[in-house]
Length: 200
Image (cartoon, rainbow, N blue to C red; front, side):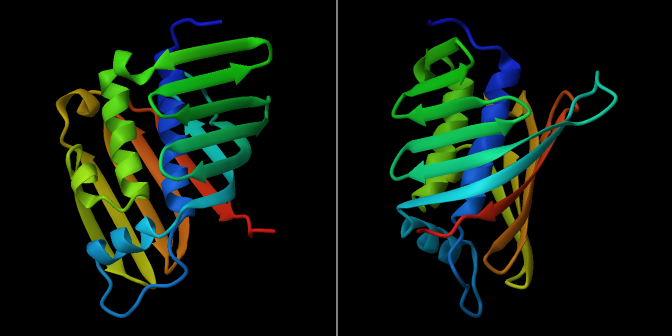
């Protein structure tokens, strides 16, 4: 069934995409690595799989909402989030279409109808493709630290995106991303941890 998707679901997708970005970091960084080197390494990744744990803090709730499951990416534009706990659900973006399924409910939407979300997804696809220019169309980037401990800060520069997303922080050690922290303008926050699943 096709119907409008609540905005809270769309921003849960935001968390999934940034987890997907995080789980495909290169195996190692050479000395003197920088943002361009990171992008070049990402461009070499064609597919991957990771487990995730997501904790979302919502202003109106006393406790964070926790979920966990699996993420999959296939270049150039297929992103999938399979949540197992607390309830099974699947979110898939492929081409210009996003599909959300939970139980017997299914929502299908065209990203062209949500330019705010489409701009974000295009930026993330640009990251997965190692396209720094695409990323910088919607974010100001700041990379701090060294390979042993680093943080990538993304501040929205796109006006529509900036109405909903305040800041994204991605931190890690060498090729391991420890956390992805997304803060929305309404005060809600999503903190995610990931673990790569080795190819069989």
